Image (tube, rainbow, N blue to C red):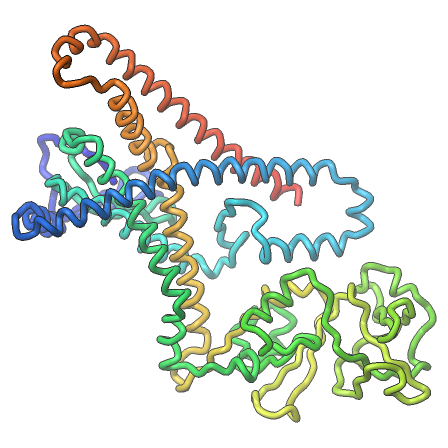
Length: 512
């Protein structure tokens, strides 16, 4: 929302302005002013009196929720700053010896944790760094929709209070879109504190409302039901490979459309989030059975079990299925890549064989692939050597198969990503815009709250108003100065918190 002082100039019905800097484009129009005036006149009529009262009650509730959001946003900033301070201090003061001895394990745990756990109260969405770069169009689209929803709140509450809309438009700074509505500041300032509170908080309230609607829609599963019109749920058969990064070694072994049935010995139909949980959580590998291997193929040289970097040798560390203290070294490819006899103990094998399994800390992942998704006769094993989270990053799966050939396989994934970003952008705009920062709704909200508080404290009975007005004329200027000091203090404090979080986040990113 932008407040604009009316000047003696004509605003065109549609205008696009390109300033000296080509990194900022701005387009505005008056085409929606007529509709805004029509809604304002109808709400002012007696026929829509109940509707107006209902809307006032709704936006009063929204004002309370946005005030709560302002305090919540400040608390999240404080929490994030403390969390960043503690994590940065621990990283800086951590001894180098432990990092060098367990370098590979630390890298795996840290990277996986960034996806599986929220380490800080506020985590930025940065395409190419914290989220895939290919998600940038979805992020920009969700941001456009969220800002339009935000500005519609200011327009509706302005119509309720008979404030005309001068213009509406959009702008583009670098690649970040923004929407705005322009209202006459003089008319807004003439409103009472409560009425101004509704106008200022309505944008954030709209974002919160849309976030709650999307949250309820996701919980109800209505999106899945809509997708089932053109897709079939094949969850009981496994997961379908929807996309593999072009530069991934897995692109040659996991073709798009193939079925994945198990990860190690974990069936992917065991739970809806089995794929993400198993690949991202730093849990031990799941081996329900071992492999019968000839004892002659097992080496007594335990160097592969001591060396934490298994990439330097073709051998990998195995342990006995009955006792993890018995360690062996052997080539894992001939053992794990074939559908050979499995065992529960060495008694299940031949006399010349031993029942073994990979040691739990080995970075070896068995992926069972079925190109047809039917019987087990077409199944084969793909071995991945490396951190499991890299498979999650490079391979996208879905449990929905198209009913018709013309329907894209990856459309449900795009829809799910867009749905998540739309929820995130609306929640972010609700919290961020409620912060008491310059040029945000939160700064106007802070001013109104201070006015309400000081007006309540300085209120006197009506019978003494004339006499007290003569005596307290100087004290009111003092109250205004106190309000300005508090406003400046809170805004500077919030700017300091935000700046500290940004700087600490950059420092933490640089030392990781």
